[in-house]
Image (cartoon, rainbow, N blue to C red; front, side, top):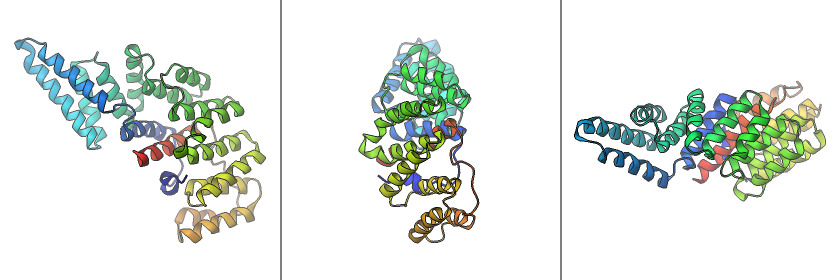
Amino acid sequence: MKSELLRFRPGRTTLPRAALALGLGVTLCGCAVDGASSTRQLSEATDRVSAVDVGTAASSLSALGTFLAAMRARADGNYTAAADYYEGALASDPDNSALVSAALAVALADGRFPRAVALAGALIQAEPASDLARQARAVDHIIRGAHAAALSEIALSEHQADSGAALTRAWANAGLGRTEDARAALGALLSTPALTGVGGFHLALVLDLAGDRPAADAAYKDIVAATKTSAIRVVEAYGSFLRRGGAYDAAKALYEEYLARDPGNPLIAEELARVAAAPPPFIESAAAGLAEGLFDLAGELAQQG
């Protein structure tokens, strides 16, 4: 299945952007704070207001107003304002786990990763199996090269088989050199019709990183055939793979086929112009692979949501 994100997003993906992708994925798709959870937040906040005495009513109503402003900013896609408002609400009600969860989601969406990791730790104290908190901590471990610790975080989450957890588990295993375990983890994506494109692409990337060129070549060919060379990230990755193996003519043909569909695309035109030069690896580490994957997955889920 084609991914619009794969098709249109330029440039290399970095780990700080992986944190952003994690936040955008849960924010755009409602995976972190869905309607039921939002209702729970509002109920808890208003219950707290109704329980206070007259002397504290003004400050409590102010806190509720801050919370409602945060929800509105988040609904409008203004994650910076939403993150600021949620921080204000938390200052008045730091033990409200629903607020912590919402603040974590928008902190990720706004790229405030160090703060998000701190919020994840706080949320785990109240909700030890929180998927979002465990996922955020797993990403942090992979950034630091602690792949085994990342696997431990995912193992403690409530929904260990969901797409984000599966992708993180795949790249954590890739970082440990466990290629077959990584392949198995990607099975959750490959068996989901809407995510087969992401799963197939990352299978090729994992095999490429592992140095299994025959298997990687077969996986790249499968995903190129599935996307009909319309996915720019797939074309960039496979072209890089071919050139690194000295298959310059095959890379040239791949680029030319893409340009026949999208004439003048500057990224692929640039790759074609330097086709005889061997590029660096498209994905140089498990961390970079996870960064790529979270963006790919967020794009697919947002497109469906």
